[in-house]
Image (cartoon, rainbow, N blue to C red):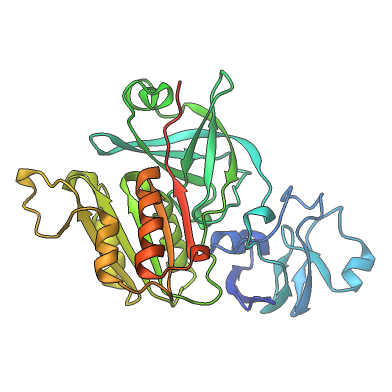
Length: 336
């Protein structure tokens, strides 16, 4: 049996199976709701059932008075009818606690000669809450950290995807490309960062990626698709040669399947055998050419610090972009 759940005051809806908790159903479908222990002990996910009925399940953090007031714990409660519930949805990075967790390497796939997709599987009882666009810190044994954006959407919080570019001589990336193997355990903390959609006004959005800066853009777009985001998304992905557009078929598929999503790949130095007939040059120049007026847009840019700085300057000075509507996540390499 499947029930429809409407969340107030946001108006978001999701479906819950009769044998799963409301929290499990919400997280599975990409809704960010507050929670803590996930076993009914802490009370962090307490909320009100406005309409409909639930089975409260077993919990030590819900009193008879709470039940009489229409409250329940979403980590334990199961729907027995269609529901309207009250719950604050997490819209700010400050709403989500930073956690330290172990994870097992489930996949190491080379996407390009110098890019590997590293997939981490969390313990069965854990799921990482994060906003699309945020990053985690891999905790190394000597106390150092390496930061990587999450490339998957939050509704896949038990499985984390990272796009890792090989830095010759890099302490961590050398391990990823040479000695790291499946089932190895890594520790990380997160989520971190404020690089996520802030578009309550519904403005058209430019998503600008350079190299592996595509990772958080991928997360944002996949979450937008899951949310049925209706506003225009213009993806510009810049790379050196065709091989560096390591998941080019994915944004092509998004654009072909969703009328509000548009995709422009740009190569700065296409190889002789690339047979490239698309756009060339600096990726932010393609945006300048296509959008001479950005005064009514937002821009989310992720890539090298140089790309970020130049794009910010040119978009604001030449295209009238509001400084407050430029959001960026610069990828830098940590020194050993």
